[in-house]
Image (cartoon, rainbow, N blue to C red):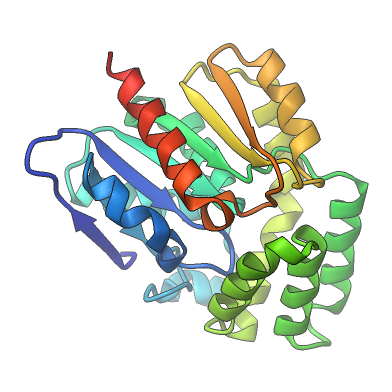
Length: 261
């Protein structure tokens, strides 16, 4: 089972589950934890091979991860904690896992908050993935990760986010990085499904105005999906919860509280 931590509220019945992205860990939510503990029960988890979670031995031997397998890890945790429903808050690749969980287990998802959401890989993103596939076994994965981080978060004001994710990625092993990178082979059909299917679960997208790779697609998705809304934070890049934590916290807490009214 994944490594995780829970913080129970004295009076609230609402659960919030945080899902980080590839190469990160639950520590990327350190600017959210204090505020969210004031309002909700909180579940922080480390995805397999990240943070304090070790890879599952069976899947290491198979040398392959899938989005369904990793999603099942999250469901196993909420089942173990007897959490019937939760609000799910994700960043970057974590938003794909949340959307996949909602597709497969919609009754477990009260709402989705998608920070730096990925719903389509444009030409530049696909080129990055192809380069990664070509060079993943040749050059050190950390060089690749630093390169990707710079492409996705290029501006000076994105430096803190880049540094945080590179620091967390250093805790991965090369083979673990390659297992996660192979997920890209199934990402396009999955994202195509997500864009086409209006799942009708309350969804808030929180995107940086400088998230050039992914914001244009989210703007289109919100126009088509009935229960979706978008807040764009100006002068902010991909990792909105790190770059603008106070605004992110305020927006998300208010969004969840308003759903209860």
